[in-house]
Image (cartoon, rainbow, N blue to C red; front, top):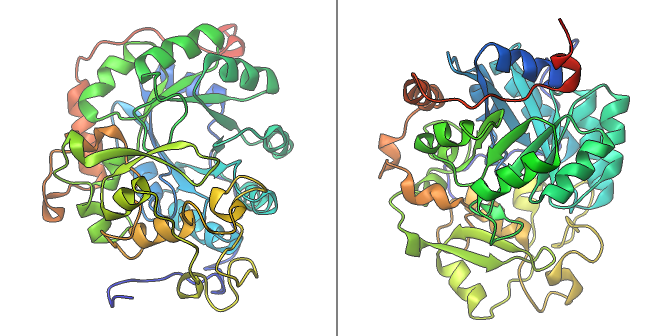
Length: 393
């Protein structure tokens, strides 16, 4: 492990007492108020294992004349203690700002519930969930009076989430990074499909760069989500080499792999690891004490920490003779910055990041101000308010 790596310990004491008050909730009424004022949502995507650490609070705190900024902390790959610590850090950086948590339904169910309940206990602004469907997390959110956002890749799922009581939808198109749904359905088409199936506010996500934003807002969405663009900024805890791997890329540098997660398709930066996967190589899990400490992940000390739900990991199901350990690969990328052995999930928009070196990267606030300037006088298509708000005087 290199000397410039800071590894969080799952056994460290939590920093400070539990929060006395909740973060503001990103309710449908709050979204409608923002839309009435002429603003739109600017959401920072969670970006997998620990990549959003150190970013969510800065996005939520960013000042904007055109957007309501929203930070999202990824719960995936964290212990409950790690998640609590990162949420408190983000809220300290953005008092009064919107800070939510992203969870994947594909992870081990006991971890999923533990992380969801920790997030709700910390008073998050919302929970957003993808990579599978979990109706019970919506129930938990309702019980805690916390908004729920569903990540959708079809109009059918959008209608289902509205029926179940979701507050917001994130329409994630084929250009997204990491695990993607229908790789044949581009974001523009998906937005129209979702709008035709649901009256919920929609955030467009997947492969968006600042110059795309006006075009999607003109389609009537409530906001946009940027992930890859926020990877390429000065702030955030991910290794400098992780950021560097997203710079100066052409279309040939981006590849869609077959993930260990149920064989789903996933978009990543091409490197020696993705080439080895394409050639049929497999990568069994390695010990993770270097990151989680001697007690392991939630007490699991073996190389395989059973991070995914039963039957969902191709590597584990094959007795580690096929595929790869996703936790190892993503940690090697974000924490160690290993350009050879790491897995660098990214959106297709990586080819349109203007900076070429880490030294050139902008701050979160500078990226937001660029978006503000691009929106000056930009066209808007009217956004439908929720029925309850539309009926209010």
